[in-house]
Image 1 (cartoon, rainbow, N blue to C red):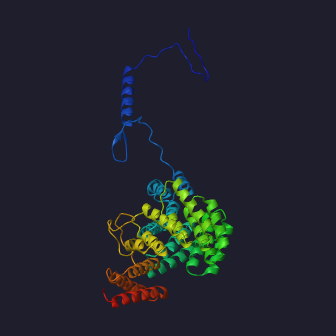
Image 2: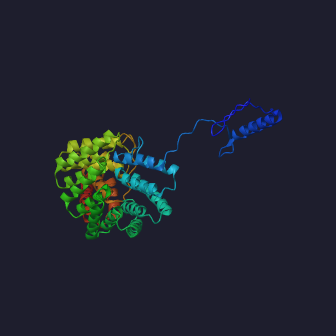
Image 3: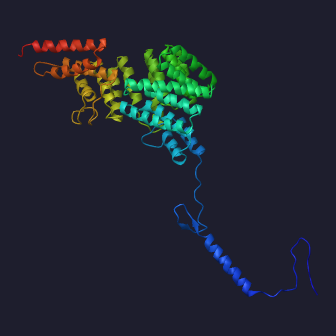
Length: 446
């Protein structure tokens, strides 16, 4: 008797068909061959890899890497030579996604801002050069992106204010910055960053009224952006509106509370207003942020030293200047600033070796404060010229018939005359010290 189950369910039958062993062997052979070929997978290098290997780690998306960079930026870790920072995170983005124009532009923005955290002209110049390289590539990738062009304006504008740039370079970069800002606004008239950075360009062109108008519009359209408040604060400071400038910088700091250069800027304004205690509080806040991030930055200590010096507290000013040198002992500019503090304190003997490191350079043996060799500053900006004047003055003041520093002093003063002969303040210092040395030469040797 047959037993069958029919319908949608599986059907079982008691009838059996004869097995074709030849067909079974052929099928088994085909299955085996298929499994062997399927197990041989070509990788990009042309090698075979077997199936069933562990799944590789998932590639991180561009968005997750960008978020990491933003997190470092929010924490105030734009640049940390000892550890991971926002700049490193954006380089990671571009290593995996080199065609991401926005990420490349953001890297250029961070490189530009980080130049304000560097204490030597050479380091700042190199950092701005990197920023220009990145923003040029971003603009090539996305020439019609308003934000890319806005950041291009920022990078070029800051480059134009570099003390190491030639006058021709400064003018060319400023003109390019204006063109980039105008293009950014044309592409998107409501781009707050474009309006803010255009205001910064206008300010450096000494068009203060137009700069104020553009910066105010940027803040109104983008009140949530740190950059708009920072630029508006900068413009207001240039107009002498110090109270309102402080308010804008404080709003910027509320948005990004860990950016030390904002607190240093506020402190500098309070110092200009001779509100020294408040200025010191803001500089101390910058130091606290750096310590929490494990960053050693000499700039807040220099700012503190200058503040105490202006308030007549020369001893503690010198202590902070020496702290700055301990952090970065090869920075010749810091030696110049410390030398100025010593001169103000009438510590000419202490000022002499320190100013020497700044103006003509010194060996490790000659360096009584930092203990390392220091390369001299180039005479390429007013601050350095001031150190030259200070050094020449100290050399002349300490000259005696038995120990005459005047030959070296006159050499330094002559170099100053060649480069800054049109500056009446510096030339009055030169004339005064030349007269001191002339008197010494006319004095009979005992």
